[in-house]
Amino acid sequence: MSSTLKSLRALSDPTRLRIVALLERGELSVNELQEITRLGQSRISTHLGLLADCALVQSRREGKRTFYKLASQAAGATGEFTQLAIRGAKELPEHGGDQINLRRVLARRQEQAQVFFNQVAGRFDRVYGPGRSWQAFGHLLLRILPPLVVADLGAGEGLLSELLARRCKKVIAVDNSEKIVAFGAAKARKNGIKNLEFRQGDLQSPPIEANSVDLVILSQALHHAEVPAEAITAAHKLLRGGGQILILDLLKHNFDKARELYGDRWPGFAESDLHHWLEKAGFKKIEVSIVAAEDQPPHFQTMLAGAEK
Ligand SMILES: C[S@@+](CC[C@H](N)C(=O)[O-])C[C@H]1O[C@@H](n2cnc3c(N)ncnc32)[C@H](O)[C@@H]1O
Image (cartoon, rainbow, N blue to C red; front, side, top):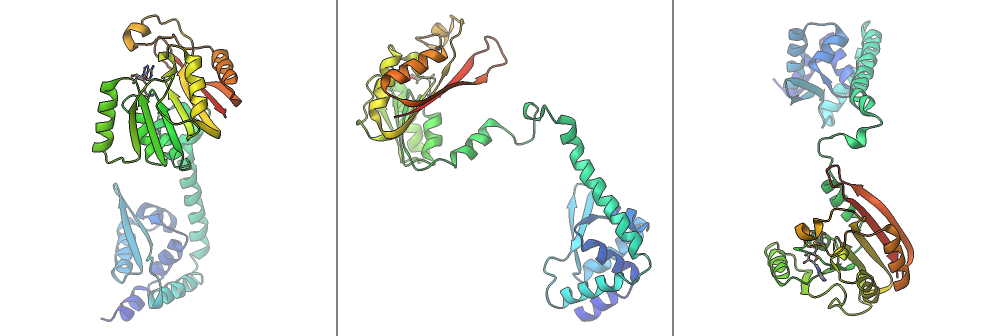
């Protein structure tokens, strides 16, 4: 039988016209169609099968449920048949009731979707949410970065440098540990990152040309510097006019073991220390704030300081 005849036959039944008209508003599950039309599941499934056979509707499985919608390429003859079916359905006595039930079902669907969020409102940002992580947010925020030249001072093995290099023009990672530099450089090579260069050197006199970078980052590095104020002054020299410095460091703490456990030179800093050193080095637009606090003892807190040359 030709596809035209098949479609005409499929639409010769009032129930199938009702179904087509209901699917005009969007996808519906078999259960929802059953609830709207008050027909039994096997009858609904038979009608849907016939409509699917002549490509007037298409289905999608989600777990145990099957959803139906009008065929997406409802162009040409299929599109015309669908429009005729919808017009015809409006003349059926069940049409008014179907539309009222459809609105009810869609409103309930919407309410169900909101139940979870209504329950967690006010603490949503503190509860687990599938796929929500600072790592994911970090990747998203990186996309906003313009193509900068960055100096990552006290870079370690380059966790942050590698991320930045994906978006930045060039990243120079400086660290004073020969082994860390060798390891970081080898890792960057292995990962095929060509715009990340590791250099061995000190925070207080980084081996980078003056006025050559757009952004200096000191992430958990400043508390290792012998004279932190000197490291900030050195960072100022590297920056072009208008360039930025960003410092992540620990707020002053009493956890004395940090020296022996993590090789720390200083037990973090006061917010006013960072502000003072940045100002003294000649930075403008200085902002210092606490951006994170750890749940576990000794409850380290992280400061973020930013300023402009
Ligand atoms: C805690 S790690 C931070 C690594 C990285 N910035 C991060 O946030 O993951 C500190 C790094 O600073 C380096 N470092 C310590 N003192 C330094 C100095 N005076 N000059 C340059 N690097 C130094 C260490 O070798 C280490 O790799």
